[in-house]
Length: 114
Length: 114
Image (cartoon, rainbow over all chains, first blue to last red; front, side, top):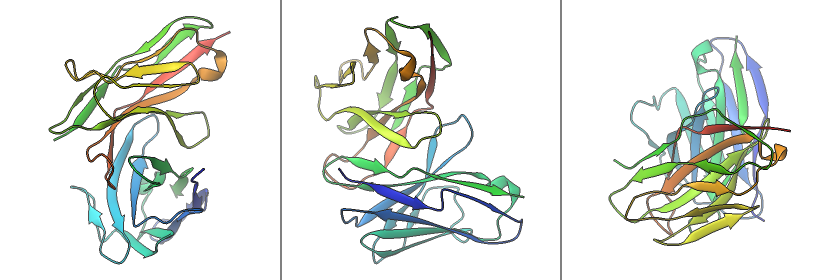
């Protein structure tokens, strides 16, 4: 079946540094991918829609200059958290449409900012 | 805008008990409805889905029926097992068959006692 991978699965960084998270569709092409953020014991909140070959669409309240999204190819989208701070610590999850209304989710990346 | 409201947890049941997790939605169009499950330490997995009114989604003994008249998609299982312990998310997708974002409910944590 369709699989989405994320790398890294967890990362710890110092405050003020930038962190890049990769999201790949392994056996299908995805013109659109989505990035979510999940706080502990809470639901997933959509951050942005990543479109191959064009700019990402950000949800209200999400800083596009802080969360840079690049959809470089039909199988890869990256999320860069710039100048990370402890409040950016969270679980980041990507997803991609694998046909029809079927959405496949990646396993998530846990970011801890010290 | 579109939204999903689901039963707050945590829910604790004994093994072989009957499970119901309520979910209602608000949508302007005709969304597809989903239940996703997140097992401890794992990513989000699609449990079941329904794409139109009166459809019944089912998987692993779980069922949910798309009720347009009550805008509900309650999750049920006749006899739960310890392995069903997880967080369950009700969700909707607002554009059937197209790449679209998924809106999640707040999640319900289910714990099953042996």
